[in-house]
Length: 81
Image 1 (cartoon, rainbow, N blue to C red):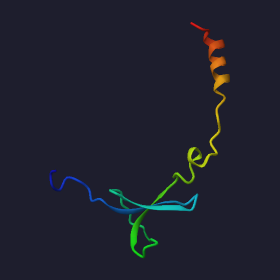
Image 2 (cartoon, helix red, strand yellow; image 1 turned 135 degrees about the horizontal axis):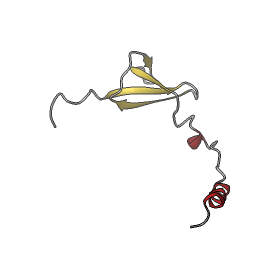
Image 3 (cartoon, rainbow, N blue to C red; image 1 turned 45 degrees about the vertical axis):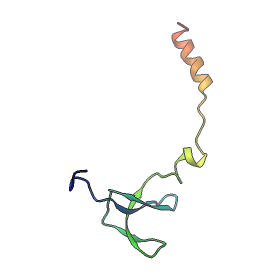
Image 4 (tube, rainbow, N blue to C red; image 1 turned 90 degrees about the vertical axis):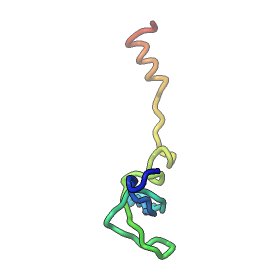
């Protein structure tokens, strides 16, 4: 690999404030804000709006679309060809 072309890859905390959920991972993203993690070390923190703890697909609160009604409406509108 070529030297000095990749951004620094370091531990970062991603925090979902809406769900009160945070996880530590490695990333090239960085932030000026920091947080003290469970292990006692201080890491940069990035606040996100949606994570696996708050996304409807992962929490099981996703609405199921009426696909049968949509198909029937499409067939009425455009006919079976």
